[in-house]
Every structure is written in structure tokens, then in C-alpha cells.
Figure 1 (spheres, helix red, strand yellow):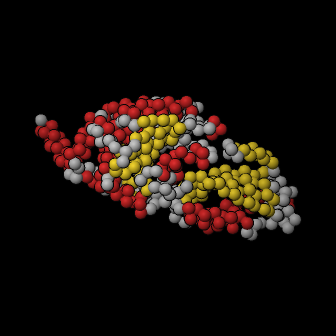
Figure 2: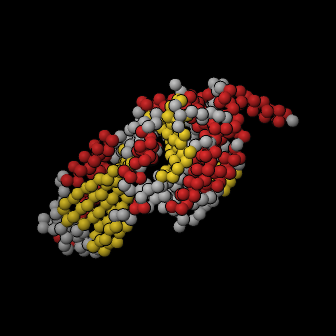
Length: 432
């Protein structure tokens, strides 16, 4: 009996803490989310049990149908944005409502996961009361559920009236359709009309918000050289061969650039030999070579990650100089770059938007919401619009092991994150 009384007292104290700084309306939002926790978990289970790997077009569309159904319950109008067949992608789900009150809010999620149909299927499974596992359970079907349930909470209390909201769930975030000038054209145009953008990628704990994310681009190094019998290697006539020159270049990249904060570059594949066939589209090769033949060619492909566009350009300039200067005898080299996802640079506007989350978090008794380390997050869809609108990310579900079998979600955090998202959206749409 004493234990029960102590628990009741503890719950009342928690409620009192939560009530500090929250309006009566916001307390109603909190209570709605609490009472619909089981429904949120059931929705998550339904979504996770649909395989929606990026290239599984039918699966992505089916997942879109589930979330379209739920977003309609929040009073939003939904549509499917199709992409050209040549992109081999499913398209995107958009839900919206128009109004003239408060800030115009652009909300970002995605329907696809990295788990394709030919990979072993791992369904939604509750490990215990606080943890569940399954394909994309936190990246990012859990984040999508946070969005849907937050909006349903507001709609059920009549709090979305006259608000302006666009929810954009892309169907190919994990492997965007190329060119992105087509696959992200509608996404970018709609975001330009917004005042703020909220990304619901995986939360890195309750107290960290992303105000910056590194960008991504790729590079390709091609080395050619004289070939001949290995007995002549290093000689003036035969030279050093392509493999030695490629090694020199890669090591010089490492020596000159690897200590710069937020800059990384990774050679993901290297191919060299006397004969080789290389498929750039699939990053796959077949090679023939002999130990007594000087290699005439090498191809290396890798990525380049950066926090600002200036950092990217500076790195490219240094890499070009290393490739073209002081080539080993008998070798030539060339490097080319391909743009990928731009950087989401940490700006004052982004940090100001983070402060809105911080205020909600502290009013809820969750503690501060600080800016996270931009180097800890990879590129994401929000980066395509970062130069047009103030934005933050990391508002989605919390868990571990994203992109791997055994990915988990923290079910105890889920209702708290939904509450925080709902109150944040409510305050933004009420702002003058």
C-alpha cells in the first residue's frame, strides 16, 4: 500500500513539474498523447511491417498510404508527388493545410528504409515494455509516427484551425533519385514558401537538437601510367606505375586534410591491375593482374563530407593540387567531383529555432535542448532547403542501430517526443 501511495505522489509531482510553463491547452495536448500511446505503437508496428526499401516502389507507396490515412485524420489534404519513371523511385507523400495564422511550418520525414526485399525481413518486435526492434523502427518510421500523432493531437483539440502546415514525406531519402534537381524540385519549391522547417530524423537523445548537418559529395580519381615488366619499376624508362601513384595521392590527402574539423574523405573502392572492367553505376569491378606487370591504371571512388560549402570548395581545391602536382615518373592523374547533398550550415536562424524547442523541453520538465555536434550527423533531406529557410533536425524517435539488423526504438521516449513536437508546432503556428 505504501508503495502505491509513493507512486501516486511521484506521478503527481511529475505532473506538477510538467505543468510549470505550460498553458491549460498544452496540458490537454500532453494528456491526449498519453491516452493515445497504445494507438501510436500500433501505428508504428503497422508501418514497420511493410518493407519499404528505397527500391521497393510498391512498398514505399503502401507505407505512404498508411501515413496518408493518418494525416487525413488530422485534417490535412494529401497528395502523391510522382517522379519520372527514369528515376526508378516511388515518389513522395505530401499533406498540407493552408491558413494565415502564425508561422508557416514545413515538416520533413521519409517513407523509405535501407532494408530492401532481398534482405532478411525483421518485423516489429517488442523486446520489452521500453524497447522494440524492426526495419526502420527509428529511422525513420518512428519519426513519421511522431509527426502524425502530434498533428492528430492538435487536430483533435481544434488547434490547427487557420494554421499553415506542409508535411513532406519523401520516398527516396536513403538513396535519392538522380538527378536530385528533379527528385527534389517540388520538395525545395514548397519549402521556400515556409517560415521554418522541422526535420524528424532520429533524435540523439532528448536534449540534443541538430542545427547543422554535414553535406556529402563524391569524387573519382583516375590514374594512368606506363606499363611493362616489373623488373624495370622505379626506373626512368618504366616509371612507378599507377598503383604507386594512387597510393601517393591518397596518403597525401590523409596527411594534408585529415586534421580539419568536420571534413572527412573516404576512398570506398580502389581498382588497379593490368586489365580491369569498372561499373561506375554499381560501384563494381573485375580485375586481372600479375605481380610481374607494372599496373597501367587505377580507379578510386570515395566520398567527401563537409559542414559548409566553403569548406567543400577549399577541400576540392587542395585535392586537385595534390593530384596534379609532383606526379611520380611515368604517371598521370585526374580527379573529378560530383555534387551530392549540400551542407546544412549551423546558422543563427537555426539556433534561434532550436531555442523554441529548448523552451518547450524545459517547460515540460525534460531539461534543455542544446545544439548537437554537426559532425555527428550525416547528410539528409533537410540539407536541400537549409539555405532557403531556418531549420532544425533530430526531432524524431530515439533509438539505436539505425541502418542495421537489430535497429531499436525507445518506446518510453516516444510519447514524450510526440508531446514535445505537438506543443512546438502549436506554439509556432500561434506565433505573431
